[in-house]
Image (cartoon, rainbow, N blue to C red):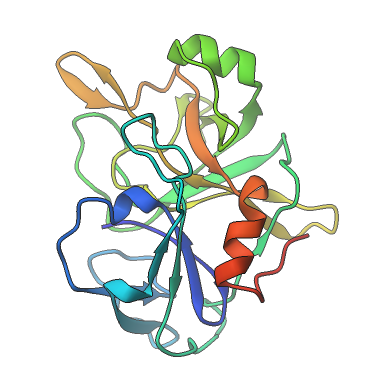
Length: 222
């Protein structure tokens, strides 16, 4: 299960690794619900789509570090927009402050998955700092971010958050997506999980404008 964002009335943006090892022929998109295990919502929408609707970035490479971890899904029909279903705008630039990440992923390495989505506030980390933390150069298809929760403790995305949005406020005060939850995990024996002291990697949405608009020409970049 992965998260994603509606970017037009017929396209969803998410992570390529969500489909990299899937043998399923059909998938289901649940829109407009805050609850993962109880998705019923009078203002929501559920749409099934097949694997032919999934456009994976041609340069996606999971082996080399989740490079170009981007997918655009073309739904078989337009979604029913409502108070809880609206396309998000995409960023032409990376906003560095007051960023947020949302998802239904784990709250820690050993905890279960929450039913209701959670969020954390954070900031963009420069490439040099990120490279030092990961012991590897930061690829141009990535941006790095770090977060704190409501208590002020370091926090961030984890298993189950993949494909969800990293977003910020544009100059007009409205939300704009700058990243996609990609590879937030590192191996810390005996677990493979998020270590919140390590900046997390996200797919760089501004750098993928050309690819995204080739599939979803009506996606709005600002």
